[in-house]
Length: 394
Figure 1 (cartoon, one colour):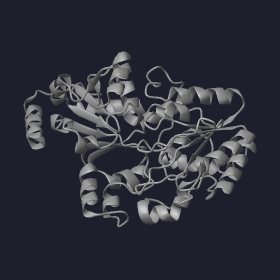
Figure 2 (figure 1 turned 120 degrees about the vertical axis):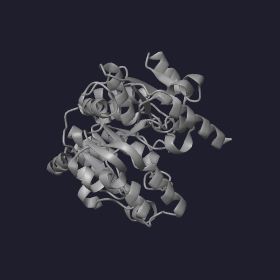
Figure 3 (figure 1 turned 120 degrees about the horizontal axis):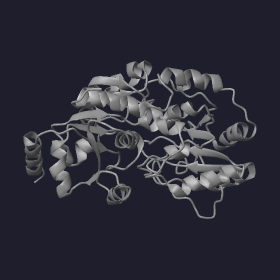
Figure 4 (figure 1 turned 180 degrees about the vertical axis):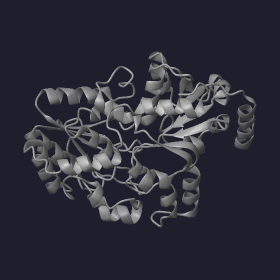
C-alpha cells in the first residue's frame, strides 16, 4: 500500500506545473520552531517573488498558525495533496520528512534547502556514517541517505563549512549566511516569534529577572543511547532547587525535543520548559547557559553572556554515543564541572560572583564560528533563495 501511494504521489509531483512556492517543514513532524520557523517568519513578513507555506503533521501547530493568519498546510489533507506537487522548493532543518512521511513523494520534484539545526560538535552525516561509535549497517545507510541530495545547505562561516557541515552533507552548494533562528537573539520577540514558545516558562523567566534573580537555562544534547543528567544521577532536582533558591537563581531546563522530564510541583526555583517548544525567545533573556555537547552553546556565544559546560559523562558519551568533529576542550570556553558540587560552585561564581575569565575565549570562538553577528541571517538566506530557486532574480 505504501509503495502504491508513493508511486501515485511521485507521479502527481512529476506532472504538476511548478510554481514560485516554497514549502517549509519544521522538525519533529513539522513543529513551528528552529531555523525553519524564523526563515518562514521573514519570508511571510517581507516581499518575495515566491509564496511560502508551512507544512505540519500536528493539528495543534496547524490551528495555531491558521489562527495567526499564516499560510499553513496539514498533512494529510486534500489541500496539501493538491498544493505540494506544485512547490518549486522545500525548506527544512532536519531530514525526518524524507524518511517518514508520504508527503516526500509529493515534493519529489522540488529543490531542497537544508538549514540544519546547529553547528555540529558531535559527528553527523557522512563522517558519522564512517565512525565505529554506535554504528551498524542499517544506521549507516540511513545517515548516508539523510545527509545527501540537497541543492543547498546553510552554514555559518568558512571554518564551520570546512571542518563540519561541508564534510557532513552531500550537496550542490553551501550558503554561509548564518542561522535564521539566531536573529531572535538580536531583537525583542514579536507575535510570530512567540508562536510555539512555552509562554508560561517565558513569563516566569521575565518575572524572576524582574525580581533580581539570575536566570540559568540548561539545554543538554540528545544522547543516542538514552539517559539524562537527572536519570543518570548527575543532578538531583531537590538539591538543585535548594541551591537555586538560596542563591536567587531561577533554573530552567529544556531537554532535546525527544526527551521530556517533568518537574514536581513543589519545587520553586527549578522549572521545565515544554520539550517540543521553541527556546530562542527564552535564550534571548537568559543570563547563563548551561549545556554539555549541544550546538546551542555556539548560538549563545552571540549574546556575549557566560556558558557553563557540564560534561559529566564525556568519556562514556565519546565511547557509546558519538565521536566529535573537534577536541571538546577547544570548543567549550567556560567552566567544565563534572559533578554536582562542582556545578554548584561554577554557577555560584558565574551568577553571584560575576566571574567571567572566559570572555575573550568565547569571543574568539564566536568570530571563528560566525562570519556575521548582526541578526540578519534570514534576509541573506531569502536573497539566495530568490536568486537560486525562483524566477525574478535577486
